[in-house]
Image (cartoon, rainbow, N blue to C red; front, side, top):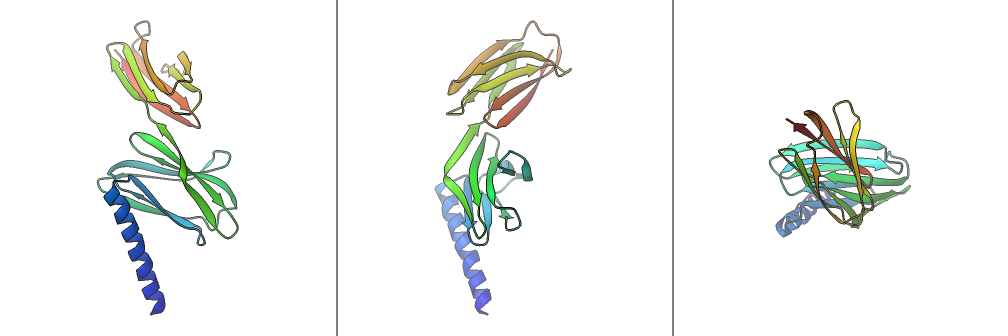
Length: 196
């Protein structure tokens, strides 16, 4: 009976915390239980979301995707994962948010204050002019490359600007399908375009 009341109180507290976060308009709310080595990700806004947990060398240990019309919650239990440093990546329609996870023998720490954010690029093709806009605050060098359908690089551009606004004239390229690749930090974005 006492255990049931304790469980009910915990669920109620989580619901209240998530509701407060949602009321403030926070897109993502993360609840951590350090001693149990668990955390849950609550997404307030509808849309596509992808969650990944990576180890310290960038290998993806776990991934889940959802296309939700409502908010959702996903819980993770890391008690059987070796101690070390990990990264939680939360991807939505417009950006990647990264959170550092330090996993210890008896607990975990998820740093919700010092998150990294990588915004996805805007790609607009009109006629044979390709306009790219991308916010890359404090991400260092960004590589923008264009590949043909044979996977041959036909153009590349490096930038260290915090705001990238570029126009590429593709009038000299043959008709066909191309991939525009953005390498920002540890993330790579690919967009397909078709030249007619």
